[in-house]
Amino acid sequence: MKKIVKILCLTSGAVLIALAFLLVRARFFLPQVDVPILLYDHVTDSADGKYGVLVENFNSQMKALAADGYKTVTPSRLRAYAVWGVPLPELPFMITFDNAYRNLLSSVKPILQENGFSAVVNLATTYIAPYPAGRRMLNGEPMLTWEEIKNEEDGEVFIFGGHTRNYVDLTHHKDPFNEIRASRSDLRKRTGKKSGVFSYPFGRYTPKIGEDAARAKIKFAMVYGDEVAKIGANTDFMALPRLRVVGGRHVFGVEAVEELSPGVSGKIHITHPAGPVFPMSVLVYDSNTESEAQSPVARGVVADLGPDGVYELDLPADAEFPISVSIFDKANVVLYFRTDIPYSALQRGTGIGQPTVKLNYEVDIIPLIPPPPVEDEGGDAQGQ
Image 1 (spheres, rainbow, N blue to C red):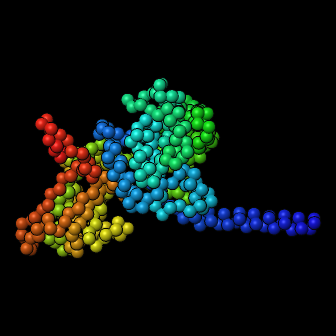
Image 2 (tube, rainbow, N blue to C red):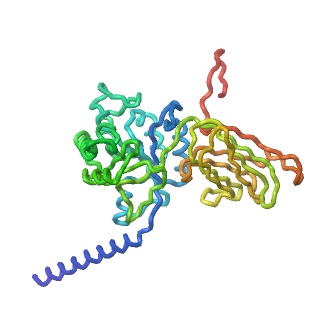
Image 3 (cartoon, one colour):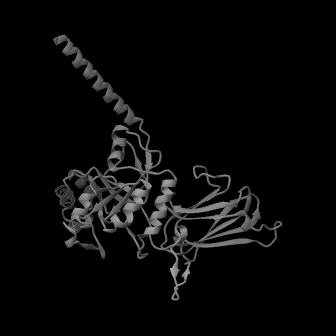
């Protein structure tokens, strides 16, 4: 019997060693994965502020991400990939909100559910009241309550993390460790669940503050960064970058101009007469590139296209109409605008030296989801 036990122990030990070897080997060869972590400051019914994203625009962006095949992942899933090599979806991404505004339940949650997405909400715990009767305000907006947050703790749509206790800039605070630890403690006390997720207020971060976060048992902390996170064995989970989604009411102009030259059939002119300026990527697809998995026929990056600027992009001679023009953030993740230019609308010239023919499109981003009809003073319905 002792011999059998000894053999079993030796066998178990060998299995553990083999598993450890496979884990080390897997981590050594683990490919780095691009994971966009989107930051939405506030989804709103108004267009005030650079980072107030209109509800209809948020809806359009979520639909576009779902159509492109993106799948949301949780912070624990990303750490499991980095530590254990647990597989990720083909196109993983995260949605995050800094501050727990009340309309997350009324405006944001239904859209997330419709697209099968989840989101991380980082909250400053001082601004969360126990019950609706004492609901608190931040930046002029009502916040969620602990009662509402606890009702969402099934994790199917929202995952909650810390954002300090008092919503302070940690780079100017005398004790960042206690601010971070306090928000984590408040979450555990009020919801009964531990959270190792955190975002630094205003994106402000230093390596020393990162050490404080780790000491407060934070496992997944986010800054701004304005770039795609690289997830792998060597990822610094105390300073994960996020792509901050630009809000406001945008108007884009698209102009297709026939201009014959070697290898070029025309020009695409992009204007941005209204809306906050942001780094954008322009992608042009033609009828031969039916799926965006295929390469665009033309692409360009614009640093700061303002109301007085025009961005010009060559349209290749072999481009086939209809063509589609899309404007994304610079990482090609968040869709801000898309329009199609049909062949029937383009009148080609007869050769070099002929007058140019151009198509003008000036489309507000809002009509991606048509607004409901309104009634005039006489009661007749009219389109907007």
